[in-house]
Amino acid sequence: MMVAGIGSRKGVRVEDVLAAIETALEAHGLAMTALSALATATLKKDEEAIPAAGRALRLPAIVVDDSALQAASPETLSHSDLSQDLAGTPSVSEASALAVAGKGARLLGPRTVLGPVTCAIAISGDAP
Image 1 (tube, one colour):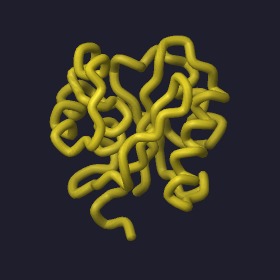
Image 2 (spheres, helix red, strand yellow):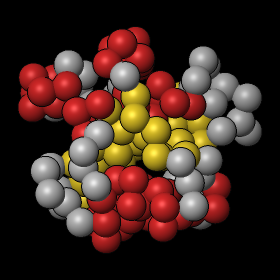
Image 3 (tube, one colour):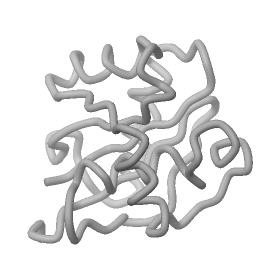
């Protein structure tokens, strides 16, 4: 399973989210079709652009509960003081991607920041 974790500022546009996902995937030589799901934190559950991006890509947009986000946090590669203060994790995009990708998941690299959106790509332990 390959998951794009999304973090964002308030009020982002779906185009911003899609561009960040595309940029993150391109950084790893991957296509949009490689994705299994999008993920974000409970803090972002009302940020309409994230589920709208999921609908545009025909992928589920999964909201990660706080306990799963915390459990994945030690595996993040990036640190944002704002993310830590607001969501309790050093990186919303990285922790949410890891949480949804599941046990043994790993990040392909640190999150990509594109304007108001961050995107991190995680793969499950059984993915190539």
